Image (cartoon, rainbow, N blue to C red; front, top):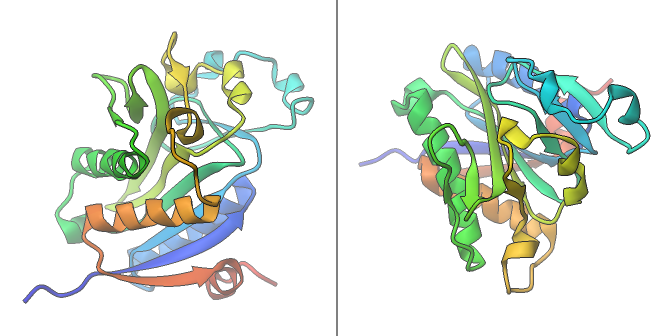
Length: 235
């Protein structure tokens, strides 16, 4: 008989990128020593551009001094991938999970993240698919609807995926998204003919798609207050 696999889900609401990075680092350290189970952080960020460890600054198309004027921040990270944008009305998932326990390698892990977003899009009649070679993320035709940038340390994952529900797409005009030129960015709102429910519902649907893809049958939900208290992030 298959043992049910448990996933702890932290609903963090809107959280600054640096706060989320600090939380991830704590969760990764705790997961490495088996202090916590596999954990999924669900949140949104204020307008933020992030660069991966390749440091492709040339894909930021405006001077850093202009970022404050448009209400955005820039952060350098240790994840894979190129420059991307995070902001309101975008569903973000940061899985902190042990790949070795599932027998997954990095490529299969990324494929399952892609499938998670493809499954969500299909709920709204949108046909999404993985990108072509060297085009990470999820696409609707030649328009990108979901981005992926991950970090794996000793088999424990962090960072993750960002799915565009209805963000301000103008922010993407200031970068070469994920380093892929001459391609558009889109959103669920733009692609579906269906009325969208609240963003909280869509975000929870994304979590359910993730759980199905990775075989979690037991989800334990926690809100921001209890999550921060248990992680020691509150004073």
